[in-house]
Image 1: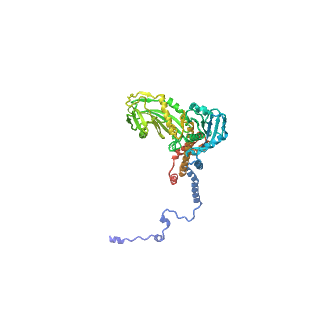
Image 2: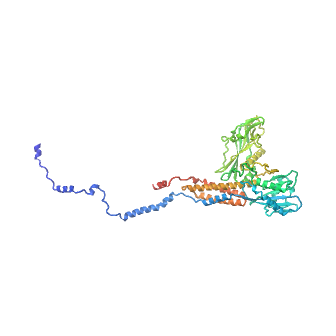
Image 3: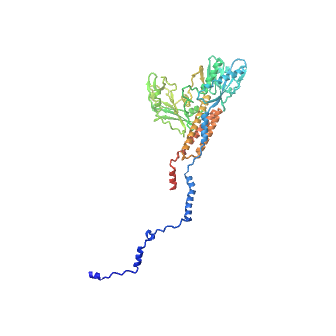
Length: 577
C-alpha cells in the first residue's frame, strides 16, 4: 500500500492559481459583506420627498379643524352678566310693594268738617310706619284721610281712595256686620282691581250700646264702632293696619308667613291636594263620602283664590285596612281613648297608608295629604289631647309640608261600640262640610296664616269675618307679596348655581333650550320686580312663580347629566387611532 501511494504524483496547480491568490489578498467589497443592501446615498434628498412630506403635513392641518369640530362640546351661552345684575338688584333693593292706607272718620254731628284736621290726622298716622316689622314686604305707604259728617266731606291732600261721600253714615255701622261689610265694599268702589292696593279703616263714631269694637272684613277694609277719641282712633288704625293687614296677625316669636316658613308649593308652581278617607278596620264599619259633588264644590273658591300662588289640583280616595302606628290609652273620665301630642309623630302609618297614588303629581309638584281617619270600634271614640290636658276642639293636627289629619268619630261611636260587620255607610253632607272647614283651616296654617284669629294685642273686642274663599282679600295680598319675594330669591339662587356649574365644568353640554329657559326666567323675574314696584301683588306672584319654574327647569335639564369627565388626551386617543 505504501508503494502504491508513493508512486502517485500530486496534481499540478491550475493556471488560475495566481489570480485566486491575488483576489484573496485584496479587501472584500461592501456588497459582499451586506448582501442585498443598496449603496449609501451620495446626494441630498430631492424635491420629490419634500413634496411628499409637505402634502402629509398639509393634510393634517386641513383635517385638524374637522377633528376639533367632531370632539367639541356644544355650549349655549348663558347670560351670566344679567344673572349677576339681577342678584345685585335683589340684594340692594329687596322686593317691596307700595300700598295705601285710607282712614275714614264717619261723624254724626251736623257741622262741616275742618279741612286742616284731615291733614293733621294724616301726619299723625304716618308717624306709626316705623312699627312695621323688618320682615314686612310693604314698601312706600301712602296715607290719606277723609272726614265725613252731616255737613259734607273733606279729604287730605293725598286722598287715594274712591270713597263715595254720603253713601254710608255712622248709623249704618249698627247693621249686621256681613251687610255693612258689603255696603262698605260698594262705597269703596266695589272692585279689587289691579294697581296699588289701598286698605281702608273706618271710624264710625256711633254708640250702639255694645261698646267699642273692631271688625275686620273680608276685603281690604276694617271698621271701628264706638265712641273713641282721636288718640285712641289713631292707635286702633295703626294696630289694625300693621298687625293684621301687613303682618297677618303673626306675633313676635310665632312661626308663620315671613317667619322662615316655606310655602307648600312645588318648584314648578303646582300643588296637588289629596283627600283620603281611611277606614281603620272595615270589619267594624265602612264609610264613604260624596267628595266629588260636595267637596270639590266647596274647595273651588279656595283653588281660584290661590291661583296666583299655585296651580292646584284636587284628588280624593277611600282606603281600607289603615290602622294607625301610634298607641292610645283608655280614659274612663273622658269616656274614650286618648292620643297625646307626643304620639302624633308616630300616628301616620306609612306602611299601611298607601296615600301616594296621585296621577296629577308630575315632575316637581308638591302633594299635600289631607286624611280623615275613622278609628276602629275597639278604639272609638278617639280624642286628641293637647299639652295643657284639654281635648282638641277640632280633633285634628297638621304636619308641616306634608298635610293634615282629622280624627273623625262616627255617630253613635262610644266605648264598647258594637261592630257593624262591614256595613257600608256614608258621611252626611253636614259632616263632610264641617270636616272640609277644618281642612281649609289646616291649609291656611300650611301657607303660614293663622287658622283663626284672636284679639291679642288689641284693647277692644275684635271680630274677623270669614270669607267663603277661606281667605280674606287682605290675607291673599299678604300671601301674594311673600310668595313673590320668596320665589324671586329662589329663582336667583338657582340661576347663580347653574351659572357657576357651567363655568366650573368646561366639558359640560349646555343645550340651546337651557339658554332659552334662562333668558325667559330672567324676563319673568324682571316683570315680577316691575309689578312689585307698582304694588300689584298677584301679577308679581304669577311672574315670580314662572321665573322660578323656568330656572328649575334649566337647572334640572336632562342634558346636564350628560357631563363627560374624560381628559383631552382620552379624546385624542379615540379619534387618532
